[in-house]
Image (cartoon, rainbow over all chains, first blue to last red; front, side, top):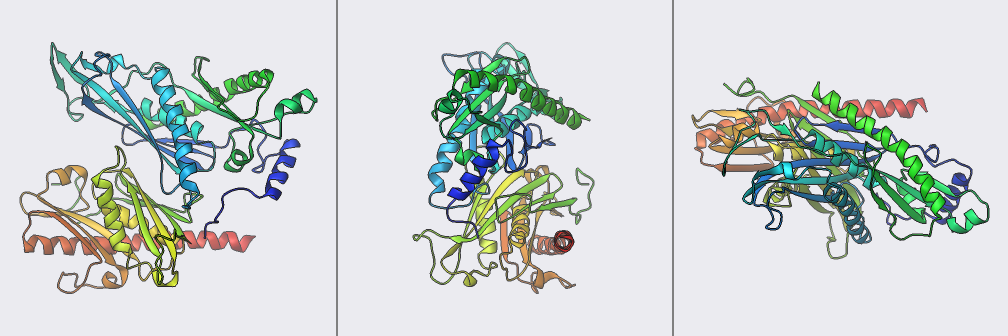
Length: 288
Length: 236
């Protein structure tokens, strides 16, 4: 039977903080180690399944022809929807509110990164200016919640977008012919860059006070669920393979010294490279 | 001739994974060819006072299609799974609790409801929820020329005149040679489109035979899992 309350006990909390202060995490990782990342794409175009430790996310890209927005007649549309599948967390009256909040954070993050940082070339989605454009829909489903949904969801979104193939189109003035995928091979999306998120959790009481008192501040990369439940602050950097920052997110939580943020950014560069390599491998192996 | 060159009574390659999810009490992925469905079970767990039944567990099913906003396809899958398992789960053993089944379609290449029922049967066994019987489902499509094909792909469904999904209990179909609609009772039936009684009977028989194959497959999958687990337990 699933437990009624999801929150860690005081003993668990004290044990984890003590272990982390000595540089050991509950699952045996070092403070800057990512969990095992597994990416599986296809066979359907635009389907990607990502496992980050035991967190499991499914991403699916689909497209349809639509009218463009009146103020952006030459741009296609991108819509991101993230849902926590009933599989992901045990049902309980408390979890519904938590569920809604967490999923809002994940949707907002992925949506912001994909749309506002222009990961997908929306001008390339135009078919007939002012009349027909491709409207992409990215569905994210969290299948198993074991912490750090944002990073896993972003990898799944990036992999799915790069794996996706849309039908080929021939345009003649204002007439457009959309070719059946069986007649003409579908074409990949035009992708400007592939963003990847790296999240950090901060454990302790007051990291800012601890730093000034000369104590080592505990930062952890890729927090697991229990680490997320006891953290005092969270910071997410979104980077692309060109070493550009797409987004930074530190919403609330305990105050952090700037030097710590800069250290996180340096670590994130290394981690983002690791993650990007894995995505490349997964896409290449699928093509063979 | 079918697009993938299968015989009319040939089911696609079956594949399953049990216990793949960490948080769910029981989980399974069931695939038939490219159709693939996840099912996860939590239960028996506490139910809201509003939902609890005094003499049995409350079985609730949530389903989602592979893409797109929530819609009627989700409700069809949910109702297929719920109607099949409401009477199969031994709910009287757990009054005032809830068994929550969540179905997530991974890929839809036809016969999704049947795959959802099969995935849920495996997930319930993985969760160790007591069941009256094991259940297996299969689907059939009747083509324009009146011939019936089992385990149809999405393409075959689009060109079909009628589609039928059946779920059978293991005790009704195992080791039985006479698989006609006159002699056995299915647990779940869903028929859509225009069809004659003869076409229905043909589909019934094809699906009953396919269900036997699915049951044999499920048995192997579960035996595998149990033997692996007892090895781990034995070695520690």
